[in-house]
Image 1 (cartoon, one colour):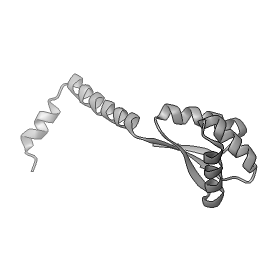
Image 2 (image 1 turned 90 degrees about the vertical axis):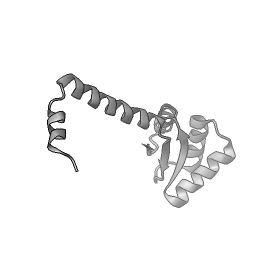
Image 3 (image 1 turned 60 degrees about the horizontal axis):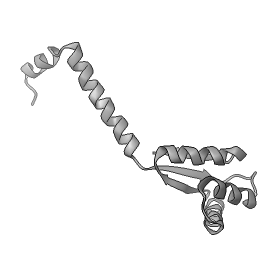
Image 4 (image 1 turned 180 degrees about the vertical axis):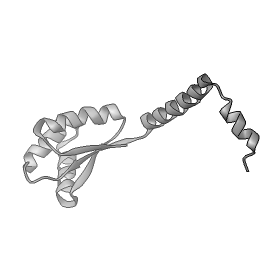
Length: 109
């Protein structure tokens, strides 16, 4: 149970103290989101050929032909597949290469 004096203590916080608390909470949220594993997801479409997708996956991720074929088949069969999981910056870099040919992607964190 919170006492009436607690409310008074909260009300008596200076503007600077309130800003510091808010800033600390914001920094914690940003730090958590940066450390969260990010996933780059590729979605199926009716526009690109298997060869185009496989080639672009190899270019974007540096993966082998076999791995690119596996991902492409998974996208075709299941409607989507995770292409990369890791740091946001790397997901963003790979996403940019995939979007060079307008592949449909999403980065989730």
